[in-house]
Image (cartoon, rainbow, N blue to C red; front, side, top):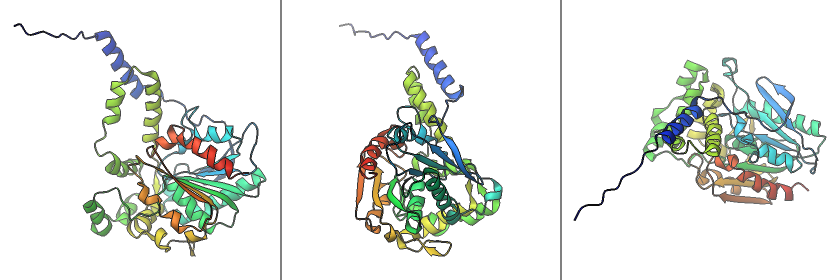
Length: 349
């Protein structure tokens, strides 16, 4: 009996087209960002407060957004149709975004205390004056959520709602292997040495820190791009995501020192030992309506880091949501928009 011979026809033209699109996606012109119209209303040093005005204002309580120090906030205005900023504006909110900008060597002494007391607090005051509102809703994403919680614990400004998404609170919960964490906390890493050399931590070092946790071998995104290079919708999303992934910004030495020593090593926030200009940050003083959102597939901030805030705050109205998303896809896909539309709408009347 003769064996059946199977032959596959190779389409050279299609393969060349796929590789051409793959190359263009990597080397071609970048897609635009910050798609939602905005205006500058306040500036301090490198930081900028942007105002996104709705065409038809529905709610009197403005939204104030705080993002992480590690990246540009472009993921919050990712693309039309899935943008967090666009969604809030279309739902009738005055929206204010505090963009930290790009730190320079002259900013090396800026620390978490400065960012909260001298930047966030003053920017919220400016947003309240600009919007002529009596209360504000504060949203913090990732480390921005940590800052939002710290600020809410000491704020004199009236905060109606506090929303934190993919937020690290309890730093005793780690995504690192046990031996790595033990070595880093006890012996292996001295933040002061790195700060002494650089003053401001370069973006490449910031990216390397995240890659060591989430993707030590960084090639799968390019494999996915090659496999779907003929899919124009996928390529556009890939280019936007890749731009954000490579958008790490310098981190001031002062902030890096407090993140490493006070939070990662000593977990002072949960213990009630973190202070801002001598004032203790007691999360128990938070009474605002609260929403905490975690992503089930988050490889950077596990739910165990976020959950403890539910027991630490004194809010009577507090909700915890765990959703099917990743650390970035929560904002990127528009999933956060639906959550905000439902919860924030009910709590902004």
